[in-house]
Amino acid sequence: MKTKFLSIMLTSFLAVGLFGNTVYAKETDSNNKKTFYIGSLKKGDLMLWDVCSQCSNTFSVTIRDDDTIYADIDKDTSEKELDILSHDSAFYEGGSNLRIEVEYYGSSVNLKKAHASGAIKNEKKKTIGYIYTYNLEDFDDEDYNDAVITLTSWKKHG
Ligand SMILES: [Ca+2]
Image (cartoon, rainbow, N blue to C red; front, side, top):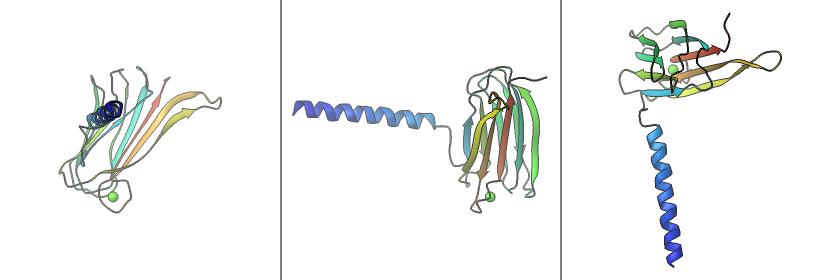
């Protein structure tokens, strides 16, 4: 009886611990704010990003790590046509938690995400860089082009 009680207590303790970690990891995200972490890049890699939109909502996109902000992009009009918001580049400075933060102004949206990512390989199957694309849906027409962020990186640059 005592062993069973201890076993239940231990299971409960572990469950609370795991649940607590999960909540902590996502605590900054909400219906109108999403964070996408970018892995695999090394200090000095060249990054190129394209940010575009086809929606009437306004929002911001920030590309940053814990030490450096590479881009702070605003869609501040209700323009609904395809709008290219940024096409730019920077070298990754090597700070922790390289990430893309998207925040819609107005909390009535419930953002949904479609994404793809992977290594870019050359003819010898060697990885020469990475590509990440995040396509967000902010309403119910399921076109997933309301906020589109694509980040490409290269290990070498000539
Ligand atoms: Ca849409």
